[in-house]
Length: 79
Image (tube, rainbow, N blue to C red; front, side):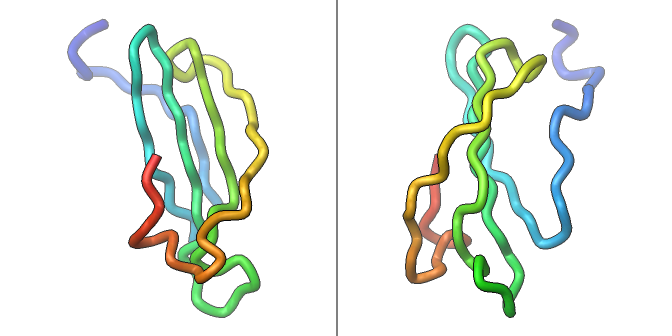
């Protein structure tokens, strides 16, 4: 509403988590989170999906599909 002059935190990530964000019409926001650690069973894999229809005021957790089995989310995952 003010061109980005003010921001509110809507997501907090654990250590070694990276979020990719996509926005759409009508306040739609999607976030995919992957594990950027190196010695973890989930390393390089998608570990979370969140979706908001109201510009991030509320969030719905989505099921995480079994993608990036080769642990290449850091280079191949897009949302």
